[in-house]
Structures are given as C-alpha cells and as structure tokens.
Length: 228
Image (tube, rainbow, N blue to C red; front, side):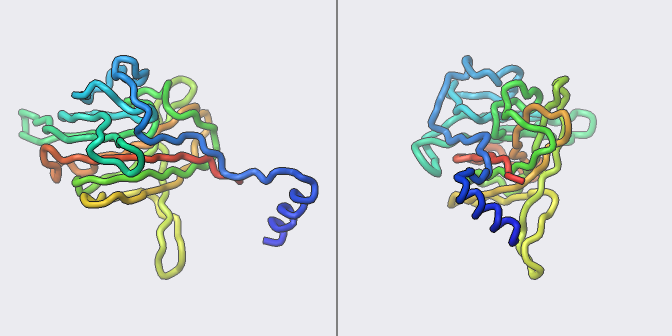
C-alpha cells in the first residue's frame, strides 16, 4: 500500500502519468450498418430480418433457428439495442432430442472466426461489462479467443462475488436477466499465450427451458485491459 502511494506521489512530482485501465472495446447500438456490409457476416447462420446490425456486436448459431439485429423497441441508453430471439429447436430424428445453441457476441464475430473480433494481447487481464434485459431465464458468459493460426480457444471467465468472507473471485458467470428492467453484468479473464483476437459470448444456457419468441436485449458494452 505504501509503495503504491509513493509511486502516485512520485508521478505527480515528476509529472509522469499514472497508467490506468485501457478501454479496448466500447460499443452501444447506435452505429448501424447494412448486414451485407458487415465484415463478420461470413457464415453467421443467424437470420437478420431487418437487414441491419450494430457495429461492435455479433451473433453465433450452433443449432436451431434464431434471429438477431438492432431494434428501437428497447434501449439502455440512446435509441437502440441489439437483440437475439430464439425461434425454434433443431430436433434429432433418431431420439427426438431438442438442440439449440445461440449467443450474442461482444465483438464483431460469428463465434467461429475472429479476424474482425476485438484485438487482444497475450497474458493480459481484461474486464468486461454490459447491460442486459430479457425473458430468457438462464444465460452463461464465456470468452472465445483466436491465435495467430486462427484456431479458436476457450478462455475461463471469473466473476467477483460478495459473501460473508468479503469479495471473492469465482470461476464461471451464470446470469438470469430481468424481463422488466436493465441490469449490468461483468466478469474478468486472462488471455493465454499466442492470442490475437477475442469476443465475449452471451449464451443461451439450457435449450430445454427455451420457448420460441423469447428474446434478450444488450447495450452499452465495455471491455478494458486492467493495469498491473
């Protein structure tokens, strides 16, 4: 503690700026582009009925049918937000099992490729936050990254939680959005070696609980690299 105070005082005397957290990605839903001009649209797989999307966001589909885009029906700030709506399951004929895998992404990616995602540094710690509203009962947050060869890797996410012992870092972020009001969610992660780009995925957690028409809205996302 004394060391940090000394560094701050010394920086003030010598006019040396104290380095703080660096914002590496900040996006609302106000900068809108045509889907055909969106660089991350390759093999997106999620339909976009309005033909327009907001810069800084993406959508992933692994199974089932869904829709995403930008809407002025909901907004945390400004006039718009991005949305992702579940439409239907993929049903396996062999066992009649229902499958659905969808996610909104913070970062311009389809979840498979990362050439237009958020630039990332190896062995760096980042914190993300975003505002969410919706009527899907269970979501999970994960971070995906891509290395120099374009290989996708999963990056563990941690959430700061308060309990009787104080504030603890806990692995995994599971959230329950509120259908009536906007809420803020956040987490932290550290990138592995040889990473070049990354994206934060807001996933539909349990396909069994989904109902066609259920929707999440997201807005005002920020990703910061934490100072050491």
